[in-house]
Amino acid sequence: MSLRLIGQIFAIFACVLMVAIGYFKRKRTILWAQNIQFILFAISYTCLGGIAAVVSNLVSLLRNLICLKWNLNTPLKIFFIVFQGIFTFITTSNTWVDWLPFAAATLITISISSKDDLIIKLGCIGSILCYGTYDFNLRNWVTFVFDCFSMVTSIIGVLRILHEKRSTTPI
Image (cartoon, rainbow, N blue to C red; front, side, top):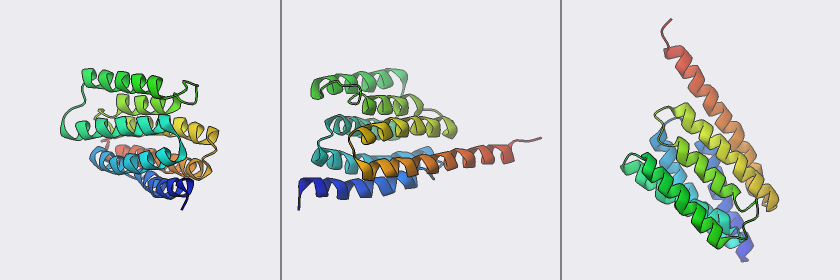
């Protein structure tokens, strides 16, 4: 079996999970599902040669594990953003495409400690836009299609959150 095919198989599993995450509303559930997704994508992008995405996924996995255990405060957010920026700079060709996974992770890092599920979901949408552009430029079509599906499910997730807020708001 070729390395590219192995990478695509892991990508499909990660992508199915990515789409499912769009339906989740609660932070803890989203974080655990993302952790599995990050591992699957790190393996996939390693096989496909997407080093910037490997760096982003591994740093994001570490960030999520810390966020599940402790509050992700501002100094930790800054640490993870700088840490990933340094690794992105060192390990990539530093094209604008190489910085898209960094931008995606930064959006998630900024929004993830919010107590508002809507803010977290909007951070996820920004991240999906960055990765969609990255996958399109890498011609990683399978993942790009799932980026599009994930965008749709995330928008549905936003609408569900808004509907829930409207129905619980006293008149």
